[in-house]
Length: 379
Image 1 (cartoon, one colour):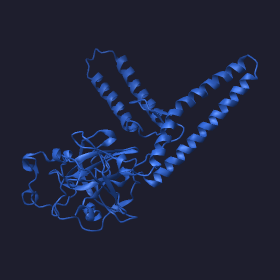
Image 2 (cartoon, helix red, strand yellow; image 1 turned 180 degrees about the vertical axis):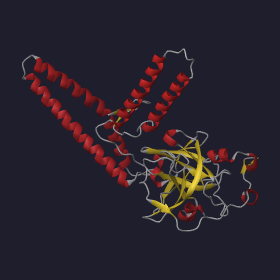
Image 3 (cartoon, one colour; image 1 turned 90 degrees about the vertical axis):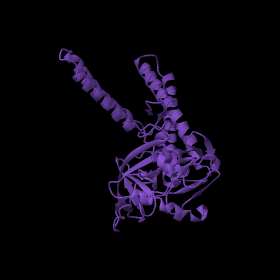
Image 4 (tube, one colour; image 1 turned 45 degrees about the vertical axis):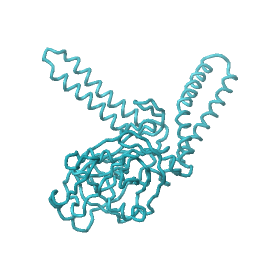
């Protein structure tokens, strides 16, 4: 079993804490960097400082790195994530890149926030206010207002992926069987001890029995939590299960939901008194490679998080021919469904996925697809 170093949750998932959302590998790297900084500071001390302290610090760094790697790699079986779409096989599109954007003065319409003109308001702050956090019994994600009453998000944010649900069910069932078999072995061991005379053999078996009982006791809470999560995920979707948190912290339940049959998109309806609507980028302001972009969302439960990067290019998925916007702006679990915006706050895409085990490769669905998919609802 794996114990989360942040909340002490016991689980079998070696990548991310199912309770608090901590990414174990990132935590490991952060701890190693912290020790490296401490080493650097130690090296800058006066030459009279004892060399033994530097040696001890270096050894501590090695031990920390090794122990964390062992800590996060442990566990009986790995627990797969749910709620994330499969990694795409993508290639560059064959069509020519979009024309360069027109000057901002020609294309950026004025927007009002209450009595404040958009030109006098930070566009990134404005976009953050229009981004929401979405939580369901099986995961967390993001979304943003596309109109006064409609919020765009990813389909996998509000309903479990069928393939990943089946894999999660298989793992839960296998773990259940393993625990049951271990409990049978413990019962048999108890019977054997009663038949053995007092002595070294009986003492040895008693120690083994005690360790096995301890291991099962540590595993059971995580298994029970997984069983509850599986039961929840297998229930029919109810809009009351979808909680929406605005930037000011106010909470709403979705009034209705609609999902796309073709793309990883969903539309939620809520009736909020203060909705900040984000505007799609004008047709003449398509992104060019190297343009600065921002993602806004709810990564690992950290609401209203803004990250920055550049637009890497247009990509097309080989199997479905879907076009995506690629960016190196940090995208983590929980960012799904949030907006990909430019420096003026215009939305260019809906963040949807990353390629597993990579960094700086994220993908967004072009925002124009939202209007094509839900035109009947939005009009």
